[in-house]
Length: 327
Ligand code: UFG
Image 1 (tube, rainbow, N blue to C red):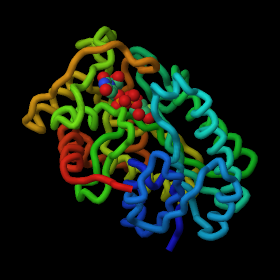
Image 2 (cartoon, rainbow, N blue to C red):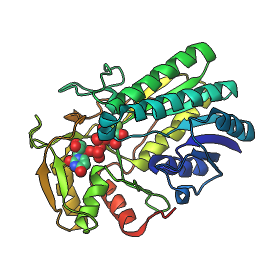
Image 3 (cartoon, protein in one colour):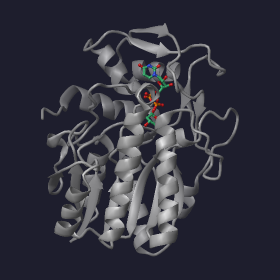
């Protein structure tokens, strides 16, 4: 069996990745500090609690499992928070990743799959966002991820670390079998907040800004199903194993939906009212983020199966009603 070190394997995307890796014949080894992750979400391989800022702990885990690759999901990822507490993002995301990358190369583990984000592109009105687009992040979260991308490029040159970088658009949905799902504490993402508002678990959803330069005044995002997203990661790992070299891939569908459109689709899928009100813009939000590239489809052979908006909301709704983590 081939061990893959999955940082953030107890989180939303990492836990889905562990399932996909296990199904593909790898052994995912979760490394997570459980600050935003859940012990209950680790279901598909060994668990090692630890923090990326603790280099000695990382060395121990590399020595114990001798992973063939790293999938690096662990990160703080709230755009709004990154604007009010940037130090937290530079310390956790950038310093933590530097420790991890150094520990990996020192342990002779040279395949690295990295979770990056379309937030590295920033706010580029009317520009098709492909992998060669200029990266001008407008929030500290995006800046921290861009810095880690730069780090990977430097370690590729100096230490032969082979990497695949995935720039995610907006990840949504949940495992259709309900084994893992999305659970953030506190929750900040549009779809789970909306589902909470729909079944009365919290107050009405607030739309952050209705005066954007979009057809209905609300922000536009490109939503991609978490199961499709993690399937691309397994393909990325195989890409590295086949020696195909360093590559960046956008992971989005190319279709954008405004906040109001997401609300309308949620009403349709759940057959319930969506209580909402209109509020001010959230600092750090881009007007429109839609992937203009099909590189992952043409080069990796990625075939998204569940990334239509109604399916994503339906899967999230099923998890929302039946699934939860408690520890
Ligand atoms: N939104 C609201 N009300 C809310 C929550 C969100 O109107 O209560 C809006 C946001 O303003 C934004 C859209 O819904 O326009 C989506 O917001 P999310 O918080 O769900 O997602 P973000 O687009 O802010 O961020 C997510 C991930 C980041 C990633 C980014 C790329 O959290 O990690 O997508 O767009 F970088």
